[in-house]
Image (cartoon, rainbow, N blue to C red; front, side, top):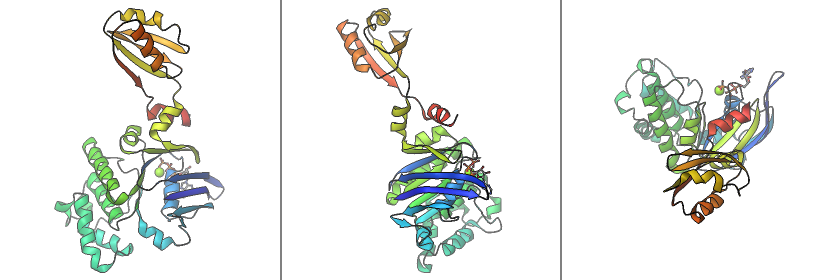
Length: 303
Ligand SMILES: Nc1ncnc2c1ncn2[C@@H]1O[C@H](COP(=O)(O)OP(=O)(O)OP(=O)(O)O)[C@@H](O)[C@H]1O
Ligand SMILES: [Mg+2]
């Protein structure tokens, strides 16, 4: 649904984003990852139509967003890095204002605001001044504003930054729930890699304005894995494991544990290990492989 095609953004002489391309499928939840200053916010601002690229194109459902920015903006919900909330307005007044600038038709405005308030669980706070809300509640108001126009694409720039652990969990659940509705596509930037792993299916990693990876998190883990850690559990004679593995090539380390071993290898040799353990009658009870996590992959890519 979203195509970013050879996009470059320069601020004066400085190139913040360099010839980036990626696509996002409808209904997916994508993590946009990268160190500080990598170009995440810059890219998100261009996708939401708030700032044009210096070169390249961005299209939503096959339409260039700068050919028809009004129509595209109606399909996008955006939670900026620092949501511009008006402290002197109540939650309801603020959402009324957002709904009007997003051109939600007048006759549908009240129900749209009510719905956004319910989704973000702000029912008790609808008449509270924004100035009197905690950071987490303000973030909810920002998200309510982002979804008030029923966007098919939701762009969230660091939605959980600065929240306490309880609110982080709540906001993550809210994002997951919003992503399930209406086949919505969600793109969120975060510095918390465990968060990306928990919420998202796809990861786009950007570093110094260049895309380092753009694929499913599972595939990223499988492709970038350089070492495999295979845990094998047996009923008896686990001390025999190191010697019986000698026919397998690429064994880097064997560490004996209670009733088994952790085997580090350069390739996936689960089948060969299982066969040797069974042939030697050690009583195989378990065999599992630990997959490298997103954090270690991220660090390798941006170092
Ligand atoms: N308006 C601007 N004028 C000049 N340079 C800018 C401007 N906005 C951003 N930059 C620069 O562009 C680069 C990318 O910034 P951007 O805000 O997109 O990074 P980011 O990935 O969102 O970082 P963070 O994780 O800190 O939010 C940075 O070097 C930043 O200093
Ligand atoms: Mg940013």
